Length: 224
Image (cartoon, rainbow, N blue to C red):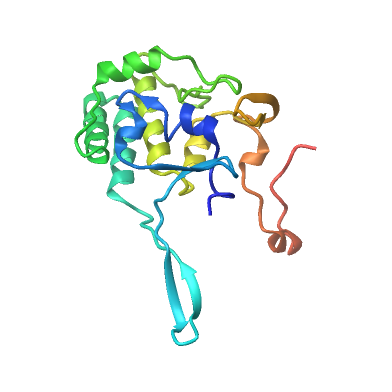
């Protein structure tokens, strides 16, 4: 079930589900990280499975799931990001702390000084030495001393909280983070870096459907 829409041990341990953050161990948020040795995939069971019978006697029907597209958790972190961008750091930390405490049933918390110390104490991400701290390549200015580490904390928590829901790409595009395609060994070490998706790569614009292109609308550009 997790073969296609899940990632491996390296990302889980270094960047999201099992990583460390200014709140401590992300695994202490209370979820269980599932893995399968035959697939080398790490994920959390967060979307429920339901079976809807079209014929109970025959035992036939179809499976489906449902999840909330807009949640209080996500909205709170969006507001925290907005506060951080406005320079309202205390308000941003308050929202972030509300979410951290709720997500961990009160076991974890953050402070502004703790956030700054954590991200100042780790290196920026590289494809061979990954961390949760990604370089920003933005058209707008980001104050490096307080605003940047606070944004790192918000984005890291949002990445964890919305794993598998498709929100991460929006943060990647908005902050100009570079994404790498890597080849890993069986022990989850980086063997080679095959490709990168830079901040200005035209592939960041999702391609139009083929029937729309066939109808005459020019396709989004791609590098030759």
